[in-house]
Length: 217
Image (cartoon, rainbow, N blue to C red; front, side, top):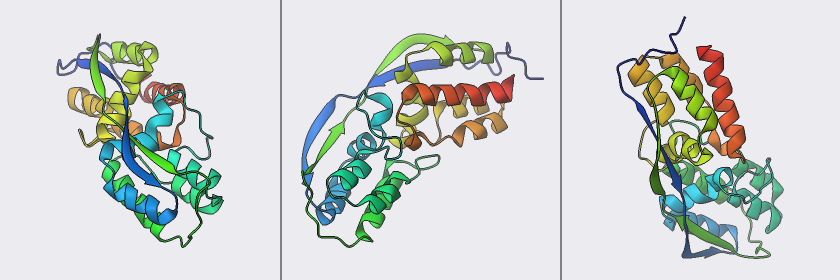
């Protein structure tokens, strides 16, 4: 039986959030060759933005094509098969933006097409502005309650952004559960969740809560 009211080693979880002001780069692409070249040149924040921003913005994309590259390849180039391959690129641990970049380039370069897009793909970058939410959790009970009620920007920052941007090797929730409580199995179950498959931050929150409750309660 796991004690939900234990403080473990006494390390509190400090909840931060982030928002991501857009920065328009000078990179554009009208075909696959240009797209692969621009992906190679783009900074990691741009790769992160185009793959993961549907989780934390109101920009709607189809659930079967959950990133900007897949949407553009499908809608502008009409290459549905390639778009589906791009949509299936995994983003779960231990992958980061550089791993995603490498696979994007490999898949795009393997597809031979000189078709010009109906409109160019315009690369957007961003830089996270991080803030303290003022909320802390010392016990597993407090952690569960906070996960359920905190601004979803905090969920995305701790579970997705920091790891994908190379600031940590694993998501903060798993790292804390393992370090403070020794809950390696619980941490591993969380780490399996792939944020690249989500287009809604509340669905991500729900699955995190469901995983935690299934392991802790």
